[in-house]
Image 1 (cartoon, rainbow, N blue to C red):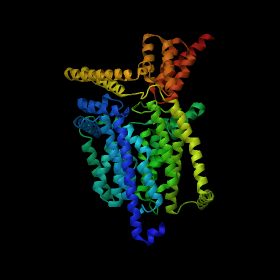
Image 2: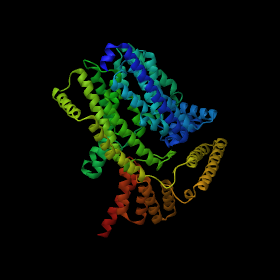
Image 3: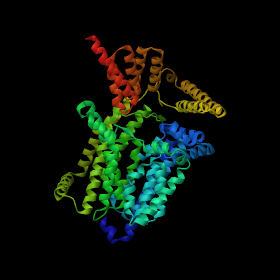
Image 4: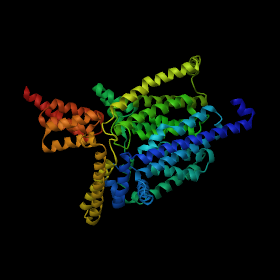
Length: 604
């Protein structure tokens, strides 16, 4: 292949054209798969959270940052969400589809950019296959086609800023694009140092920053100026879920198994994010000062890989951040990453949907499926080591002994015939990934399919609109509150009609409860003082979905009321293990421990 590239330019051009065509068809196939998912499903509960923010912002404006404690998005997103709500009404397509369609288009843009960035290297078989794998990645299909979030949009804009800085030196355009990425999520701050240091002088860095800042100030207006403290507190004070990924999961499990190490877990929970950001800054400066600087693309990829290796916070849709930056790391490592992330996401989304077919997923900590998280994280660690090795080798600072060891390992593997290597890989994948995933997904399948249908979506939306009406009424905006409550009532009516039709088609739907319905019932039992039934209903919910912290918390509360302090403490500890950041559970555990100690002292 290398001879054809060097000695026969026409053949090389034909090969590149054929490969671009293949990548284009792969991108179209992936887009169609996302389109079908987007049209046939609702997505996760992130979707109605976004819709709630968009709807509420039209009534409360900047005050929403003081009302909604879970609003951690930049103010620019409120403009975008209101635009999407308007668009969905104009084109008569659901908001859920419109939100995800933006991510689908962003994925196409990402592949086009990768083809531009690596245009001269598509004749390299490893680069071609890596781009092809990224175009077909099930990870992107599930996140963009099903999940319902803005991560694919943000990462496309970061990649575009990278291309503008490295390949074009269009400083103003790069700054504008980077500012737009910052308007979607504040995540691009981690690659800001790389982009700034990639510019040759102070003047161009100032141009880049000025353009980005101007975009942010305009897009965040007027909310930023109306409620600056609330906006900064909510947006920059946000922390992702702790204890569900990588080191944070390891430290949390160590603290549970070995209480003497709990201080490490507490320290990482409090300081981990700041430590990782400082380390990324140091990493960016170190790469900038190398004799042979890596490409801007490689540097940003290294930063994201470092982030995912050491981060304390995580959500599954974040995996979309990594996918575009892996082209240069080799076919086998990239394929392993695609496989592990795809299986991990498949198992988690199936758990949230309680089986196929998927429609609406309710996100919970994936505690019963941490095996797949560990394998996925380890694949990221491997990619991080490979990226680090490539950068160090380019600088000529790799230890020769380490190089010889890696080469010897490669030669040893090459001595095994291709069919044998392929067979060994298939057996390993089947044993360690496919079969465990099948068992987990079979266990998570609920009696009714889909578990959550269009009626559940309308009930959730009706509840949100009822809460909005209540907020408006408390502020004396009675006319608006009545109008919103009428919308909520209409949603409930339509939801009940859909429920009745579903029960008519599948009578079993009327006789079974979902895990959420069992938890709601247990809370009603608690309010009525029927504590024994409360424990029973909460336990039933855990039979269907083992990782529900609310169910364990209800069991703890009811056992406390019954005087079963040991059971109350055990349940609270389990709830805290699943959701370690919950202040409510912490307070219940402290109270149960105090009462347990008092009861123990009284018995003596």
